[in-house]
Length: 161
Length: 100
Image (cartoon, rainbow over all chains, first blue to last red; front, side):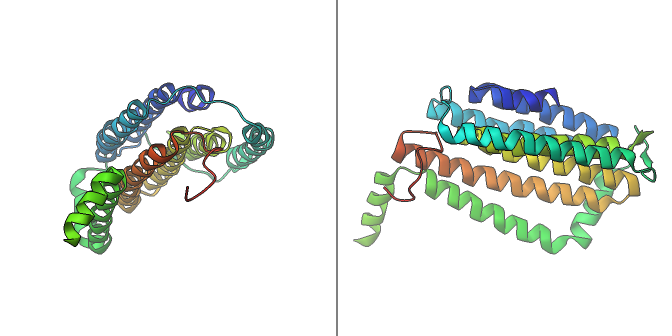
């Protein structure tokens, strides 16, 4: 949670990225406490590993500096901070005052990879295959979008001839 | 034994931080990271409910959310790079035209 607040406070994007890594790591610990050992491993590998490396590389590649404030951002701060605070307090109050909320056991490892794999490859086989197509399209889109325009134009001209 | 509501409140706080960052940040990369923060908050409540009802399908859904988030990050960062190449800026206030 401190990491999440730090993400908002920092003005330099690389500091925000580092605090986001802290959030991901502590969320992985939470998953482990909740018994989702496979998800904790995936969280560390995919989020704290792959996605954050992508973010940090992009920040370095684009040479991102401190962000400057503008009129629009001041309006968004004035309207957004009280609104989100009020909403958060309402949600927290409602959740904490519900008496029929049960509690969760801690430390029991029941989310083993075997059960998840059985579910993933039997019951959720079609969504799994659809996500593979989604990933393929995302890869192609990323390559097309990130390629240099002149290189793409030269390739198109070569194709035309 | 930890009450389920604590996890839900933490997840709500993470989501609220994501919304707040989305609203007040002007750097497009930081806005993107706020979106990731929101996805993580939702994932936490998924896992908490899955632990409450001992239903593994909640964890499978978190897995799918992670896959979609990874794809979204790849495409989004590619778009950011393309925008930076044409605009030379990362400030969302200065990116107000789809076409130069």
